Amino acid sequence: MGELLKKTINTDVCVIGGGLAGICAAISAARTGARVVLMQDRPMLGGNASSEIRMWVSGAGSRVRNLQETGIMEEILLENMYRNPTRNFSIWDSILYEKVKAEENIELLLNCACCDAVCNNNKIESIVGFQLTTYTWQKVTSKIFIDCSGDSILAELCDAEYMVGREAKDEFNEEFGLEKADKKTMGMSLMIQAHETDHHCEFIAPDWAYKFKTDEDMKFKPHDCLNKINTNFYWIELGGEADSIHDTEEIRDELLKIAFGVWDHMKNQGDHGADNWELDFIGFLPGKRESRRYVGDYVLTQNDVENAASFYDEVAYGGWQIDNHLPGGFAMDGKGEGHLQKKRLTEPYGIPLRTLYSKNIENLMFAGRNISASHIAFATVRVMGTCAVVGQAAGTAAALAVKYGLTARELGKQRIEELQDILMDDDCFLPHFKRKISPLCTNETLSAVWGDASNLINGVDRKIWGNDNGYWGMVNRPVTYTFKEKTHIDEFRLIVDSDLDREYTEGNPDALNISTTLFKRLDYNYTSFGFPKCMLKSFKIEILNENDEWVTLYETHENHQRMITGIIDADTTAVRLIPKTTYFSESLWTTYGSAQAHIFAFDLN
Image (cartoon, rainbow, N blue to C red; front, side, top):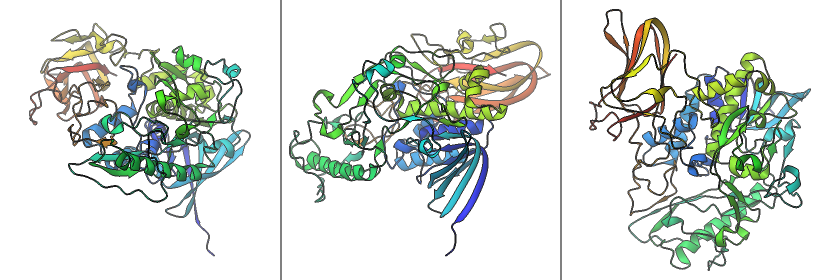
């Protein structure tokens, strides 16, 4: 018998898991200069947000105004809004795929499941994954490993400390803690997708599906999803009272019986307004909420998230409510959301670097739904928007640690300000910090033909806490930096308004922050979703040459991103930004519909 093919890859940073946390970790590490391998056990990227599971992306901005996640996450969401107006899941998959493939420093291993690890002296030397499509064993040696697998596959493979289940009240002095700890977790769910037609649609349930003839049979779960698209069948949930890793196959089988039974109930057991609705999708891969959580140098707790804690080593933030799904899941009474334990948060909390690296394995980091947090704190950090910004922080930290030959722990002690500066320059919001402004950009060098442009250099790149923090620019009215003598400028950086609250995005009235849609109704125009009207669409960057003539170095009429950077690499006495009319489109505005350009930052370096 022949042997299976074996390959070895040597890299700087190895990311295991290609959900949004893993995607953002891999991209940020690559952009910060590291060679990266991203190992993903599925045929597509996205994890719970992918077409296999179809959960939409929620985060801090879904619960608290002005807290939408930016950085790589917003870059991806804007690309999807621009290119995928019908919110097609296959196009969404392709956008996630191309974002990773576009990075020259990333080697992507799809369909490759991490199976083993070699560790010595509390350090991981290599991992091995089996790639099903090529029948190849892929060995990866790396300086730092980032586990974004959700289930924390490296925890048992390298004996890293981890937690499972719910803590007792006295362990972290948490209000929602138990009298006695247990091993129960939040469960996993199967998503349903459907659309409304203009005719009757028959549905015949499989014989093996459960029969729910009455609402009482379904434990009074809130199944008004077809009239409220900003919810779903999240309560088709099991697994919290079982082993959320090793029992997944059996749990999936039960969830399928429930899911098909629920749709049968909607269609055939009473009037639920579903007569003309047609089923598009029921997932065969459960969307998992919780399994193992690593132990880092710090454990985030309920008290931290409720008190909007700040940390000296803050590298990300959260703000989603404490949203604790009780272990009973579908079996629990849904009256008054009795199967949930919730507490709203009104301010963002910081997430420290110390929650993103292992307490006992020196080159192991992690991001996503497995960071160092108590069960109750985890109930807010687990959502995908938060996982994404945590992933970007972990990837950037890993690349920086490799650059300086440090562990993540050492980086946090020696170079935390540098890490935070890079993250904020990359448009990651840190609620308790302000971005540092280039010495080139001062009140003395900055001027505007129209209005006050001083907010462009205040270090806050979003509306927040009652302050606009932006500059409202008029078409053809420049904002200019002027220097007393010739100055070398390497690059420019713009942050423009992408409507983080999605207030002015047409076609999505009930689901302002949802990147994909599960239910499509005829009484709204859900064939197309709008793009932020306030986005700066057309502008020029010019420099003053030796003949006192303005020379264009950068011009676009089709911008669709919040953060724009470009090379200048010139000696000059002045640089200016000019919002322009979009001559090459139907709109006469410099935006996608607003009469003014709203800009948060115009930086030179």
